[in-house]
Length: 242
Image (tube, rainbow, N blue to C red):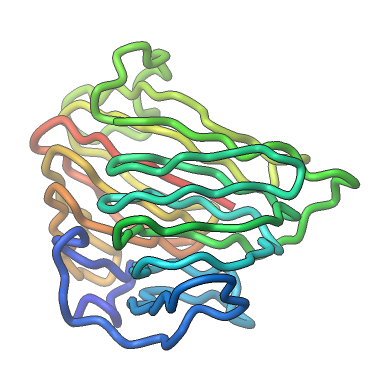
């Protein structure tokens, strides 16, 4: 089954894919001529949430982020500067959560590539919080033990992770997740973006579709996806659920 029509749309080798679509010049340019391209792999009902891969060439432009957005930057270098002076420096392997209402400028110094999820809900907070950034998720050693997967079928998969952000009323959650080998029943209760950074696993949908996960696979599991996950080699991913 093609990656884009899968029960869980996914994209292998996200850091090096070249079969992208031109999205044209970046709007609201302030300097240069940034060009965008990418691939959307999933859009929920009404076009929200949205998840995919985005590339942008050098230049400077205005931006306003209407909904919580998680970006995992795999290549390039850029500076995001909020209107209040807050600065986020982006280098390869940077995970950033931009909260709804974040507005400012982006200067792309070296062509950047990221995978992303833009949530469905607008913020209900009067004042947006600061952007949150985390460098080199794979090198993080201070993960918190999140316990045994409760729906084990075989083995004993233990999970650990680090929470980057949780929105008001649990609207969106993002962070790092690690899982050791084992086989377990999987029910995705809310749309989930995953960029798998290490390890190997197999997801089998209840329809029988088989989805193989290897390092650098971007995947989006829609709400109510059901099946079985077998983790062959300890998996580490960055994620967002909404």
